[in-house]
Image (cartoon, rainbow, N blue to C red; front, top):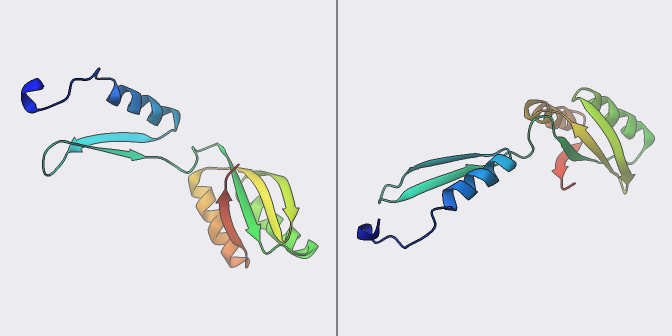
Length: 119
């Protein structure tokens, strides 16, 4: 590799990147760049299937709205109440990526904004 202008190294970069990708349930692909060299692409999912996601709903300002939000959540999988304050309902939800997308669509139909939040 010294003849190609490459720097000396230990050769661990790709192995470390693969391990980090595996731990994040991500995929790491390698290809050739148009101008030469390597192109590495790391695709990281929002959360692995089956993992718990923290999801927030708004506006949930009344008990009637809370009941309606709970009915929407029941369609998505197993969930657990985390917090309800200032018109925002926060729940922990165990679901796969497809069900999470369906939840967002059902929330919009119910008049709620729905977004993932940091745990």
